[in-house]
Amino acid sequence: MGVFPMININNAVQFQHLLWDRIMKQAKIVVDATCGNGHDLLYLVERAKPNCHVYGIDIQERAIQASQSLLEQKKIDSNITITFLHNSHDKAFAEDIQENSIDLIIFNLGYLPGGNHTIVTKPYNTMQALQLAMPKLVKDGVITIVAYPGTLEGYEEMEQLEYYLSSLNQKLYNVCHWKPINQVNNPPQLYIIQKR
Image (cartoon, rainbow, N blue to C red; front, top):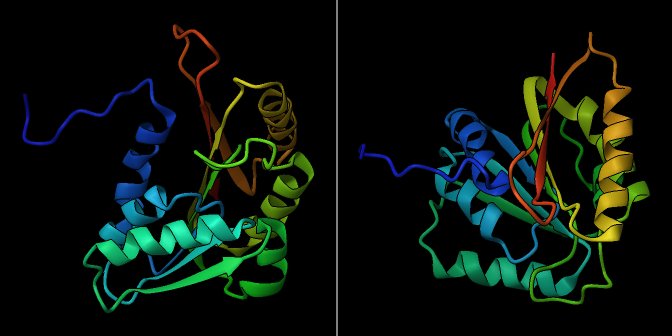
């Protein structure tokens, strides 16, 4: 066993950490577009370098409060700034986030764990958010999207997401799809966009 714990390569959420860890060494602006209970946001903030600005977006006030509470429990470098936006991610990218030099944007689709399962990300809003977010990336900037095809709504959202991402101009963006292939119950899948 090495010094670093092995990630579970069948887990989309863990697998994307390989990308995040590399990007966070230099990132200046990072956006968690679906901050939920704050676990991904905390992961990013704990790896952020001084003077990094991190945005946490969620449409549910409960999610913003849970994320704030989680971060308050941890000792966060005071040189890292965090802005919470209580908004849908498409509106946040249209109205609130003005920077055009974002290093990393993450989306964790679906519903708030432990919350109301009828409040879920909607394909239209997600595609709108991506359309607005992609031009705001720096060169080689990355977007990671975890999709959850285990429910009918989640499967439909993933299908629309894949259709949309497949149409992106390859001269402008590299797009990849990672998925477990020997797992049951439609496990989460990861989409990666990199601006060229």
